[in-house]
Image (cartoon, rainbow, N blue to C red; front, side, top):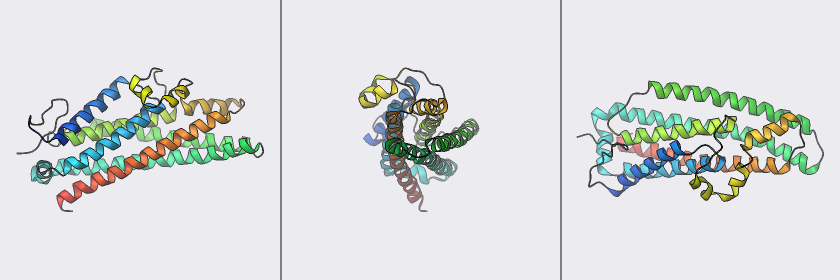
Length: 263
């Protein structure tokens, strides 16, 4: 009998392994957080951490005999292939995100250096940064359109649905991340959980999106604030660290599925 994981319908057997129940709880919290809170630097960083922890839990879930049996069954071949394809797509999203962040961070570091030394071609570096921002936003917006198409065309799989649910919340995370970095308008209210997770960043968020705040200063040629540049650079570093950890967990998760199949 095929193993079916349904988060919303709570279809795990009543006497299931604690790891399976834990994954269900993580997914429920992620979905609830996704619907209840809006994007802010702390909420996005926290979601990345939570998604990374989810994939660590999924990796442990794969070790259970009942899961390995489901993955190996012939009737689930298509569903498993979709899981593997999905893991590759998400790894690509990690790479695209990290590449875009690296481009912006490199330009910011040059600007910060000029501001600190109070000499150099600040105007030229600002133009380079804004050009990189424009290119990154264009890339992210293109990727977001493809995410919507993939979601619309995707088929619902009944078996191993918990893994498909994990893929869905992960894709939703990247959609939010791309929107935030691109400066898409979001609501100005943040969840209490996000505030408690990182009190230091809440003060920064009260001033708005870090990316758009720096964009505004650069585009209007106002007096550039070293603090704003440093805050944005620090946030980018946090995102890079979180995405790197997520990438490692995704690779481990993918390898575990392949090992179960005997590839």
